[in-house]
Length: 607
Image (tube, rainbow, N blue to C red):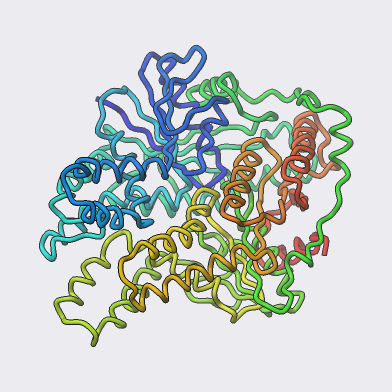
């Protein structure tokens, strides 16, 4: 029987590396293995250094048992839509086909299609092992909850109107059976293992505990924890890194007390993990019984392949005009921070928000990340309504569940008195669809873009793939509105609203897009792709924040000198490749948490 292994965790903790190394381990032991990524901003092709894409692809080299696939949401949507409409094209009138296409043109179809493709892999017995490299935690929990939610919605609809937002219940009955089988497999510990990957830091532990608890509410138990990126004690002789090492050890100790699961401990290496040979080395460490024999090599400093000229060139850089970018000029300004998971988007968003508020501008910090951390960084409670943090600064999170309840109640209230009780009941049934949650969260998100109550609204977004998806939604909904038949008042109002949102997003005086990364290959590649995707939509990126740059004065041994030289080479690449202002933000000795630390960090901005 096929064994399923899921890797989950906060963004940037090394899920893809651990999932890939695990897949290599099974392939090398003779098991036919498939690794599938469900992350829309997939890095599988980057770590294997070969093209993969939306098809099962053999991994090159001596790994003849290993195959890989990156689920592309757009391609999955096309396949899903054609799978439903295709059989009827020659049988049904053109107006019926057009109606079906309109039903399946909504953004919720994209979510459903990607989820359906993911479930397909749980129906096959072609492989001995299937490894799922998932998106960051919040989105993965949503993905795993969908089989339960959709099965329940189809069952409820079958007792009511017989309709769902994706069509009649009869046409989805096979899907319900499939979702029920998938749910049973996800809950079977003999067939399915969940592995949480975390860094030894407070935020990572917090998210691991929260996600693990949420999985248990739908009957899924995590099986193992990998603590990745541990600083070797031998290289932490200066106070800067010794404090970081001690802080990591404290979190490791807390993790051991809080989570009674098997654990594996992985050291930070002094080089980037890329390519099959490096992944084989990780696989060897992952399955080793004696980790002490595998303390990483410490003597590679200065051998990262960057020339002396590149190194010197990277030391000098023009500082961006932060005030021109961040401060408003007579109208509300929206500032978006996006990038790969784990690059420090939330911390940079909090620092920027406090900086702007301290300049005297009324500022709202909004997080659209389902795994919101701004409360932990600000060290205050942040809820689904804006609350005061300090002078001029408020914060709020787009809570999908709260947004869903508010949206549903608002739609039903507007309908009451206009329509019959039967029609209200039918509307309520359709609003209970899992698709409504995405629509409601999006509606809440654009309320903040439209708002003029604040002078600056800073958005701390989810990792790249999901943020691009969120920013695509106004365009998707605007197209869907255009396809709607008739010229109703509702259609006209919706069309005007979405066009206004698109106008704001494209106006570089009103909206500033900033990419956050740290100077390594994968975050650079992912951010560059995001910049191109935004450009295709008519949105210009205006700033790159290179975060966690190692200060020269603390890199006193080969381990950190090597990492710093690697960073400087990539900083040079960032400057040339993006051709944008680059803000370099240093790695700080202490965790940036609470207003005092954030205020200290804000002073480092070149305003």
